[in-house]
Image (cartoon, rainbow, N blue to C red; front, side, top):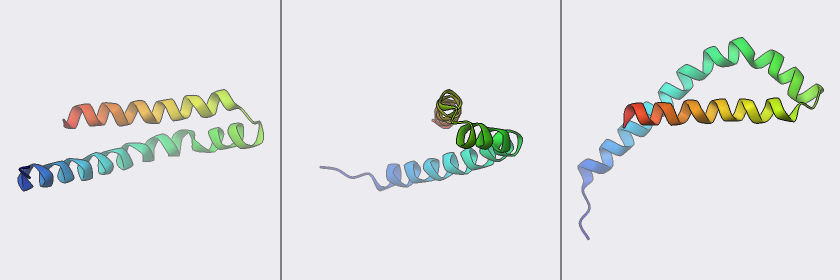
Length: 69
C-alpha cells in the first residue's frame, strides 16, 4: 500500500482551513441569534428551534466543505 504524505498534509491543511472558516462564520450567527435561541430552547423547551439551529449549522458546514474542496 502506497502512502502519499503530500496528500495527507493537504487534507490536514484543508481540515484546519474548514474549522477556521466555520469558527469565523459561527461568531456572527451566535452573536445575532444565540441569546434568543438559548432562551427559547432551554427555557421554553422549543425542540423545533433546536433542530432548526442544528440544521443551519450543519448546512453551513457542508457549504464550507464544498467551497474548500
